[in-house]
Image 1 (cartoon, rainbow, N blue to C red):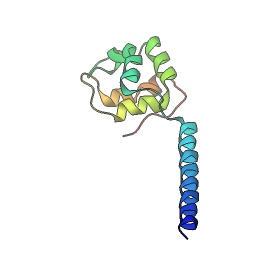
Image 2 (cartoon, rainbow, N blue to C red):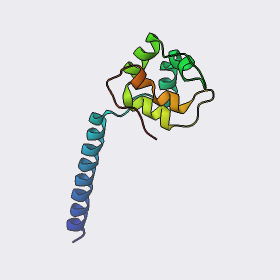
Image 3 (cartoon, rainbow, N blue to C red):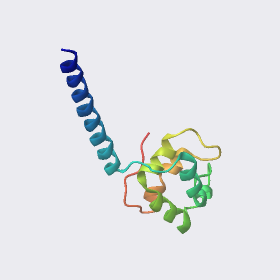
Length: 108
């Protein structure tokens, strides 16, 4: 009897793991950020002048290229992450529109 219940438990565990793996893979296809918070932040250094509070400076071409290369998922991780000193979160959320990036702006 123990062998039968152990086998059922193992089968249930395998089914659960396969389902979890499918969900994780599906999320990856939807566009999760593969970078760390810090590496995403470093990539957007060219955008610093455009997201400084009260800055009238529009995003540079280098900034817009960085936004496009980083992608929505990583930009949203930054926007929705911990506060970044000297960065206006609302201005950062406007970068995709100002840079005519082909993704929706982040929400938080």
